[in-house]
Length: 70
Ligand code: SF4
Image (cartoon, rainbow, N blue to C red; front, side, top):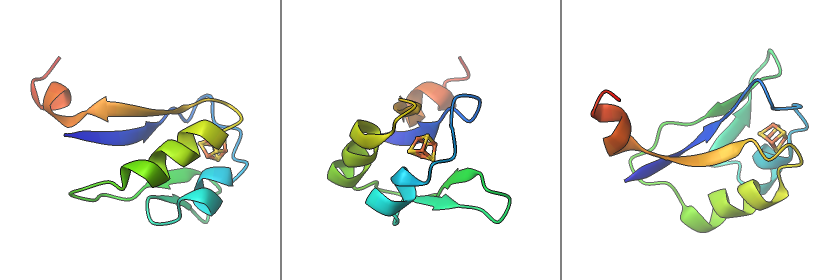
């Protein structure tokens, strides 16, 4: 299992991810990107967002890895 993660310190808040993959990425009222919590993420859609992100700050992370407490 993997989920997308946005490195907010690198994000330039261009909104491209929310345009390309609105079922996963939303721009909050404060202008930050938020990843919607889903059980299964649409891989193609997230990969498109990864590809188009100008700051290269969207990554897949392993949920299992995080749960392991590392
Ligand atoms: S596409 Fe990348 S830089 Fe643009 S808002 Fe989304 S995460 Fe931030």
